Image (cartoon, rainbow, N blue to C red):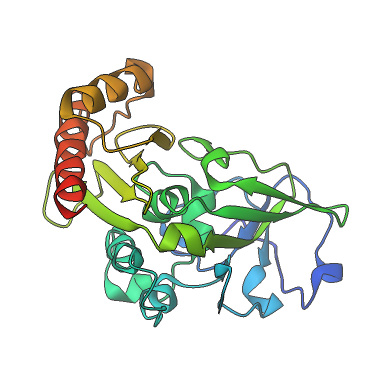
Length: 273
């Protein structure tokens, strides 16, 4: 879609070229959402792709993804065999509402910072205990757990002019067993519930809930809980005002589906333990 209100597109080559942030600015990465609908309040785009960030880095500490890494690049990664959670990465990439063409343009940072409840990279980042590296306009930087980045639908903890530079997934999290379950109203529809469970070598169990809620929720247990205990913990962690409500699923359906998927994940991880 043409964005007829845009007056300027800036293409910074390094951090020093980043402009002073002002009302009407937006960062452009893949642009798959930005160009999908009118953006009448925007006047200027800052093209982050021009910074030329390497899409990813694999080392002993884990996986680092630049904000401009595409979901296609992420899905195609050949990861260490010890990172047994790797299949969940591909499943999250394919959970994006869009064709393979979209996955080769949509970016990790765009999916995370857009903060739509169904964003699959949100689920991946929280489940893998990722840390976000944020660049501030004054030249400083800070790190923030992915769990604290998304505050609600299209609301994040980013300050005005702050940019997501990269996302680090630690090797310890990637080395855990992981199970993903997803539900939508139609076979290729937007996720109405997307959950990821992980099981560590010491038996610690964690469950990440997204899509059915307005912001990601993560529950942690020292061991795999019983079904009843898990459902009670979910009910306590998911008050009614946290359940998302839109055309992709009613709150009562989302709550019920979340409980059912959580039970499936719990059973799968317990059986494999």
